Image 1 (cartoon, rainbow, N blue to C red):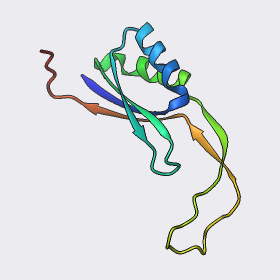
Image 2 (image 1 turned 30 degrees about the horizontal axis):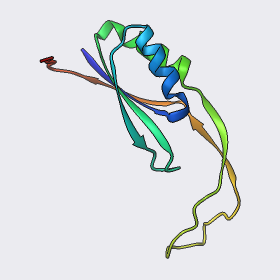
Image 3 (image 1 turned 180 degrees about the vertical axis):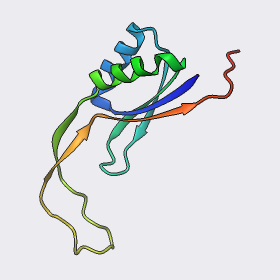
Image 4 (image 1 turned 180 degrees about the horizontal axis):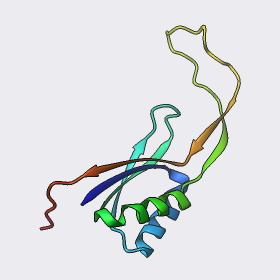
Length: 109
């Protein structure tokens, strides 16, 4: 048994949730915040059998795409402003960050 931890952008969350439900994967959704852009993410916890991990990863890949987005950097508060860029920059956001962990025991009460 494996635990898949998938951190996805909020824009992809409902599409992925629907796809996982349709494919009979059980998932727990947690609201989370990214550290770099401080934007909303959703973290999915998906428990599944070893042989179904590749199916779950395919669903995540198909429903979570990366995209370009313009962001306005936050100005430094009391820190070093030498590297501060005062104008919006384009960054790649979205996609999914996935961890697959082995599970020694599973209990459902």
